[in-house]
Image (cartoon, rainbow, N blue to C red; front, side, top):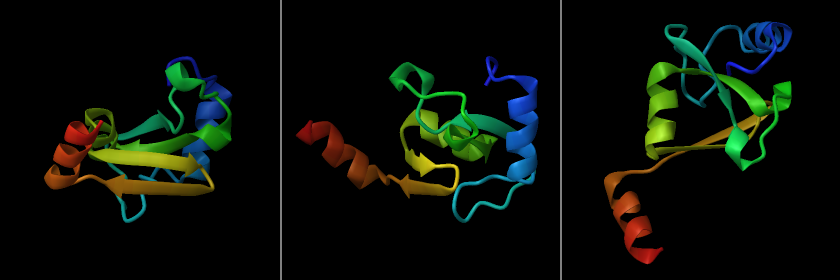
Length: 92
C-alpha cells in the first residue's frame, strides 16, 4: 500500500479498527493494508478495494493458500487446503 495516500490509509485503518478483516480473524497485531483486487489486476486505491489484514492472512493470500475477494464491505475469504491446491494445479 505504498502508493496509497496517507489520508486513505488512515481512513482504512480507522474504518477497520486496526483489526484483521478476514472473516474469523481478530488479530490487532502486525496489521497490513491489502488491495483486494491487486494493482496489477486493475485494482484501485479506493477504500472499497482496501482492507486491513494480519501478516499471517496477508502472507497466506500471497502464497496462494487463501483467496480474498469481494469488497471492503463484503469481504470473503476461502482457505485452500492441500488437496484443493493439488486439484487446481492438475486441472488447469
